[in-house]
Image 1 (tube, rainbow, N blue to C red):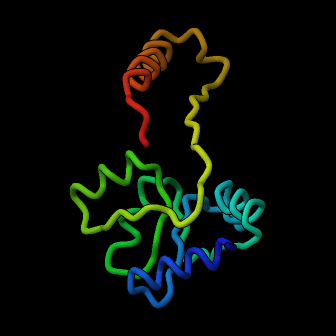
Image 2: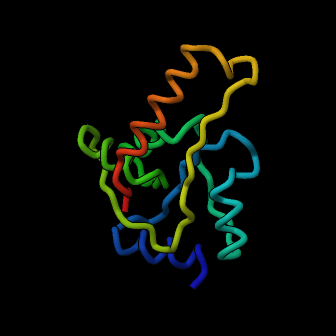
Length: 130
């Protein structure tokens, strides 16, 4: 089944006439997720809204028929305080790998090293999201 057909079927099951997509990529090509989906399923999603980060997307679907694909932990956190509903994706999605990046001049900076160390320790304690 194509991506468009799967999304359309799921949207109809949920009572949506049409679902616009919100995407965390402020560039014209739709970002990494849409490129992956197009390669995998051969379809392009209709992007209605773009944002600078995943964390903004849940607010952009409130009161609309839009959908947003966000990391599961973020979706669960937002669903605790926002009037949104979580639904499983109608197709397989890639795993999102988070990385840290910093300028080489900050490599030995004590505050930067401390922050990187704390982030690494805390994320290592997290259970798998699925």
